[in-house]
Image (cartoon, rainbow, N blue to C red):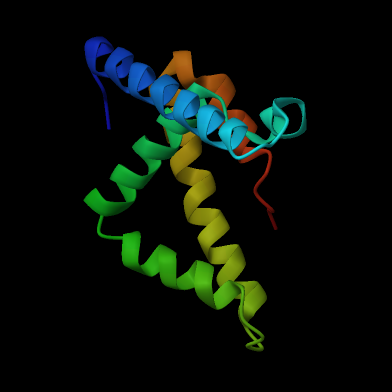
Length: 118
């Protein structure tokens, strides 16, 4: 999961471009930026999400994680357990990203704070 500094800078540049496109699109749709800018993730959060998603795919857990997320949204009796399982996997991945990439630590911890635990 270790990413070279030049790769990280490229990922950040791509994330900033993605945010600019989102901002531009929503503004052109007539939305007031003051109403949506706080909803947009930071560039570093987009980078952390990309690393998390790559790690899910590389470890072969992407399909399981996605299915657990979907099952967690259902009315199944064990929906809460599915949500918790997906949250636990994601939390651990974000924790590892924070430890391996100190410059992304703030974004990773912020994302971890939005995950329901226990």
